[in-house]
Length: 99
Image (cartoon, rainbow, N blue to C red; front, side, top):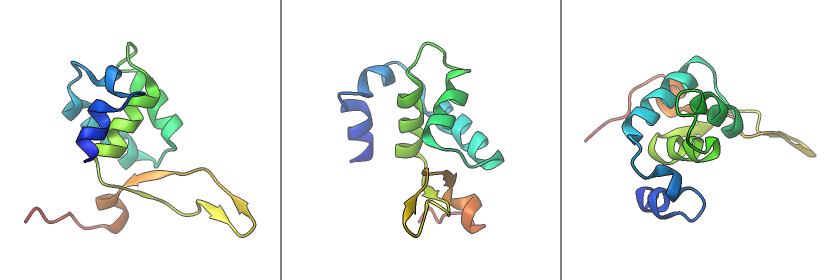
């Protein structure tokens, strides 16, 4: 479902055409392992490597294809905060099972 959404999405699908998404995801993982980021921050960092692509689409690809978590504090009582993502494996400290 997430793959289909990414490649057929009206907003982001066109920017994904012909792109090696495995490389985008690997770069996104490296960046998020270094420092959890908001989608906007992640997109701007990825766009340095793929300047011909939409930064929001690059971040959307990582969020769709890499298991991530929203790290605290997304919001506090009575207020909201920016969503900040990190790879789930680095957040929980154990690798995901592949079986």
